[in-house]
Image 1 (tube, rainbow, N blue to C red):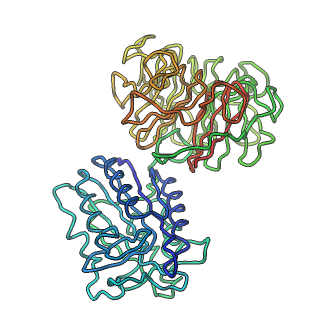
Image 2 (cartoon, helix red, strand yellow):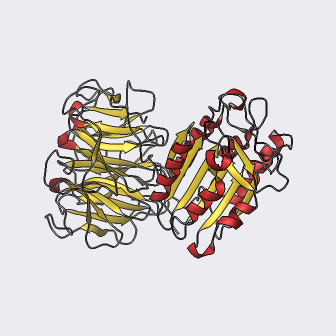
Image 3 (cartoon, rainbow, N blue to C red):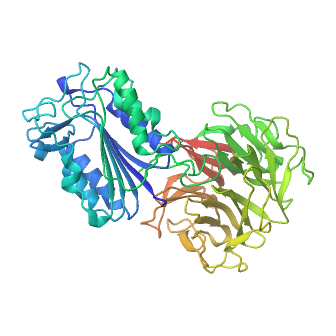
Length: 565
């Protein structure tokens, strides 16, 4: 079963006085980074008081859908009183029942949030301060309770009729503490968890076995994690069969917090030196691909080449395909519009638009020419799915086709002509038609999103669908928040939130599932221009694992990065 992955993360340090902690916010941030790398969309809160934690949990539960995978992580003080566990928010605690977050209440709400949900709750609580002292209160803490509630939480609050599953993880045994570290380091437990969480093909129980082994050794056998589970299936944080990073523009590859904002001034990471063909220049760039290490590969259309810019080196790029003048030789490209990295073959797959072909170039330094994968196609955008399905938009036939590539190479297998999976009914604005389909995005359900350029809309085609659904625009060309004007690059996260390069409105927009009729502008609110907060026809669009936004600023011959806040 393919599950959407959502996570709610808390880190509380600022308790003040002798209750102050120093690593919980770092724990939370580092957990977000790891969880995002394995497909979770994370919402995080730091140093939160009880009203904020209550509101965050309530909003989070409202987004849960049947069949989701839910993870909640808390790093901070915890306590137990009268057989119940509590998470301690920032602020004065007189009575835990009213001033803290009750674990029993959380579990009951999760159990009522939908059917067939897989829930993982991780509590790095009962935290010790810098002197390894625990929370001090008039109520009993876990060390003082003769009948700890660890084993009661699930049995008391989880009911079978919903079909949901739960795994409840505590960072330490009942009656013991969770050790912290020096400022700038993770707690003992979270450090061990981060070391093993993304190891491929480990079920949850095996991850916790490795965490326990590391934790016992580091704490001289004074701390051991506690797992209470009623899982009915094997749960993997990182299943090898999930899409490999970099093989596709997939919504499981990168995840963006639903409430994210970005700095409004971009930083130029490629180009910036006017139009030209030097290695520090771009000329009419189009599509781009952002690799795991933030290396950016760009379709430098006007220079008939693909250029790679390493993270941190904004001075010069490296030509990795083409660059031998405009032509149709295997060593040449003619106005490439899109590119992706196929990691299984360590190669580039390129839309060689004017040559009407899709070509493959090895990434080996000795490569001087490519090979043709698909011929006679007026391609514009490419995307790849985990099972080595290649999706290509054909702006001439106004359709999107899917091709099967070989397991260990990029050779087409059965069905070499591809299968039409969107459009294919001639040029038009009907729900079964497209009008100049440009860029593509494929999610883990094999849903295909298409920037339907001349219809000024983005279409969503579910697997096997005969018609698409308008998910952005479709109200004619215009600059209202209900409209798009020649949309280009697109990206979709696991919540179904759509990001669009709205090219002739010189902006990037976000369209949520709840607000399909109207989008919001996330960057580019100042019209056309060359300033750091402006675009001149944004085209390509992508994100890195940290949620930073990359935009090909076509008219300014540069690529801009906008840091997530």
